[in-house]
Length: 494
Image (cartoon, rainbow, N blue to C red; front, side, top):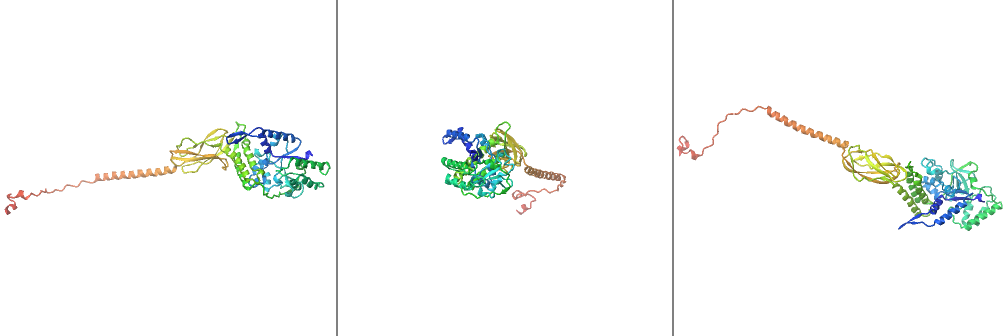
């Protein structure tokens, strides 16, 4: 019977319990305080390590993420990240079944299947997703027509059918499930019993179910078989498309869209990172906490709880914002002087991340200075001064805004910086206007001087006119002075 039992384990749960067992702190209003439950986490992890040796083990999607809701919202990279990783091997020391997954409700949306088979350079070829190949998937029998063995599409995974009758009966207790199982005792088809992901059965109910199945095996009504044998059976000849019916209680469209949008920016940042040769840190180590938080925000546990999903999404968004804020432009303390129209613009960039980052440097378009976008590498933990080619077309004092983004331009890094510029250069337009004004001034001045010289020469060349003889003009003599003068006619009249 042991070989017929396979443990489906959430790798994010194991990671969380490991962190609790190692000790952790919680942010409180008065500061950080030590977390509780360290002893319980140790005990749970030790018990799990004792139970898994010799058993079939495979990993659930990380944080039991709602893969279908994510895929429809455009979160393909996060769908693949949910299927990747080697947590179980490292934490539990076991070799889990590889390439197997079990989506919530045993249903697979066509877009989720497309994410499984997406071999684009951006996703599956990334170091983060090297182990995200899906070769077999557990699905509800009702969603996959035909008989075993069956494959989804031309390049999709093998289908392992879950018995819907027994699974549905589990909700009514172990006795109902065992009664449903007895209906299949004469069938040669394999029977896979898969409880719901959110199964709240008590320890007594689970033990009663296992004991009932063991009794059927002992009485030879059933034959125990391992899940691995179904995953590695004959090559499927039938190829079908998965049937999917949207679940009313699944992760809401708004919650899935928020997670997918943050995932797009997080992946954009990841693509701009590279390990620094002088440091042991890798881009995967820098970005994994953010992607893990995104998976928790997309967990099926948030179905019907948009407030909880939004709170979880804010955590992942905050982690990403913290990474983006580690890269930026240093605000200059004094204005920068540009001596010519092609003077390069000095920019100091800083990178406080433990990995290299490639950025796009952009200047805001404004009248006075233009600079084409340029791509620059910034080493880990160091500032870098670069000279950006620019064209200055005005003089005086003005402001330019410089910003950094990922190489795709979709995600801003840090905040924009305002740079005060002082230009003593003249641009082409200013030179032309000044030249025309100078030419006009010299032309007018020359014309005036020429006219003065010409007028002076003309006056010198004209002859002087001869003087004419004129009789002297005497002033009249008053009568009183001439009275009684001999010869004066007026004296005889008197």
